[in-house]
Image 1 (cartoon, rainbow, N blue to C red):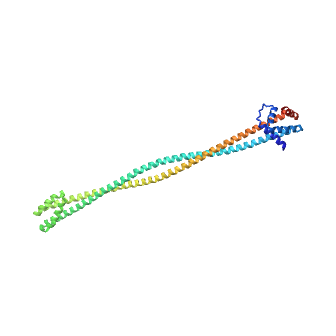
Image 2 (image 1 turned 180 degrees about the vertical axis):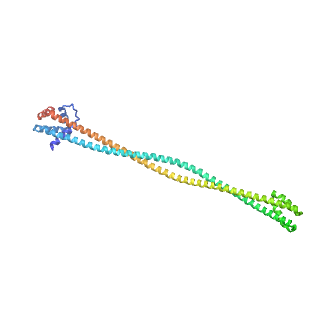
Length: 363
């Protein structure tokens, strides 16, 4: 055990000497001897050789040290290879995670921007639709008022026609009574009422009749009666025709209003539904934008974390690689020292007398 430590100490001392391959055995030993501990070791080694210790044992120990260094390097290579595989897997996962977050950020940004644009369009359309609804309702109110006025006019004119026809019928009965010989005095009150009613209408159609009835009141004769009856029949026929025309106009206007109001109501329903849809879409757009903004913030944080983790892993890998290379270089230097010391022992110090001679010459 003491001998192994002695040889190992020599190797360490030699390793610290920064040897070159062109140095002679004397120079090598001189460098080892510069270290106080190395000098002591050389003294012990010299004593061991002087007492007959074989150089072969030293070679065996040096071989064991070289084997240990090679074994350590193989273990280090294996650990380095395993760490490299693990690191590459971690890096690949982080790069994939970063790519995912970047893709999500792009998608969320596009979603936020497109939804914001859609929100603006929906809000603008809501204003237009709201105005259209107001115009529709105004049109419906105006057209409804017009239609109501038309209907009221028809009701009034139809009632006037009925009253006028009743007056014509009453006049016809009075004239027929006069034709039958009834005294005018008996019919005078009825006659005056009919005459007054006809005069109230102020219709040009009744002027000839009013004049004829006025003459009939002063003089009743059969010829005038026949003429008045013919005139009454003509007037009544014209009133019937006029009333029918008014009714036809009323029905046509009512039918037109039914169609028009139906269109206005359908348009109103469509506009109201469109507005409701747009308002609901606006709510959804705002929710989508808010969620996209929040998700975008999360994805940005996730991306930063992943990038930080990647940077940390890359620094760690660089440090591990540098440490591995430094340790590998150190082992290579140590192996070189061992090999050179073996060369000195095998080629230049094959016998104890040679070593002692060099020891005496150098020191």
